[in-house]
Length: 307
Ligand code: KPL
Image 1 (cartoon, rainbow, N blue to C red):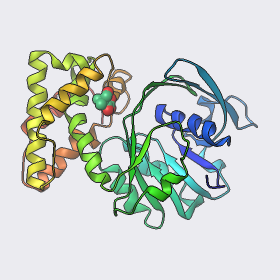
Image 2 (image 1 turned 120 degrees about the horizontal axis):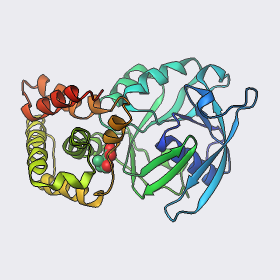
Image 3 (image 1 turned 90 degrees about the horizontal axis):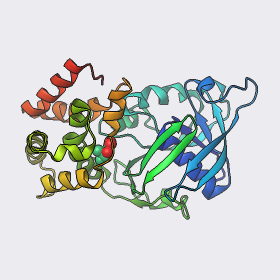
Image 4 (image 1 turned 90 degrees about the vertical axis):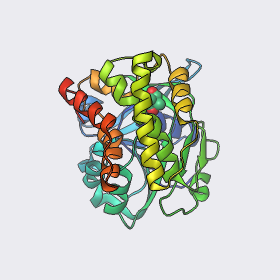
């Protein structure tokens, strides 16, 4: 591992999962950069806190971390993992711009598409790595994360530079990781599934498995048909059996509430602008309209779901 400390922007489920895992793998405490310090620690003068990780086998481990706001950081950041919501990534990155090392490594772990391009464009001298993760995690209370589902994190770079060397740092890391030569395609394939599932689960306030009921399934099919249409227009590949893949994710995560459903329930801003909203914007540029996607977004707006 590099001798530089790791900084993690965002203390949500993925941020906490990576912070705890980094401590397990390296023995070094990462620094978690948060917007509101009091939400995590009540000591005024001391930045240290303990993060609890409940593992897949339900055992618990505890990990010392530092919790800081952007304006408390004075030393240059060479190693950063951005775990904010997609809609907050650029603002959060700008908040640490003055302390970000010019050629630092930045790993972006956002859902959906669009935020990664925006950050890469705004930070041209940094080495920007993009991750797409299927790890499942949820927050029980601030700084207590449950690892709920073993997934895979694929890491690559928009300019196809190999991520193998970057990934060497994570040897022996407890989360599963692999280098991807075509991370845009990985993000696109995940987007297909999220476009079909996330918005609908927020609309019906249901678990993923409930989308396999007939009336909801046909809405999912319409969204998937539109995705395939955009994909074909762009000359991108999607699996022939995309509908089957979507059903399979619904079956495998039947009892889960999607991240968007949870955000909507808690009246938080969702990431739909970077999921269905992203597809609508890409389609518009190609002169295509996507009635099923548009109708979904309209119905969600009427319901008061924010993005
Ligand atoms: O990625 C997901 C999410 O919740 O954002 C799915 C695949 C829908 C699993 O819940």
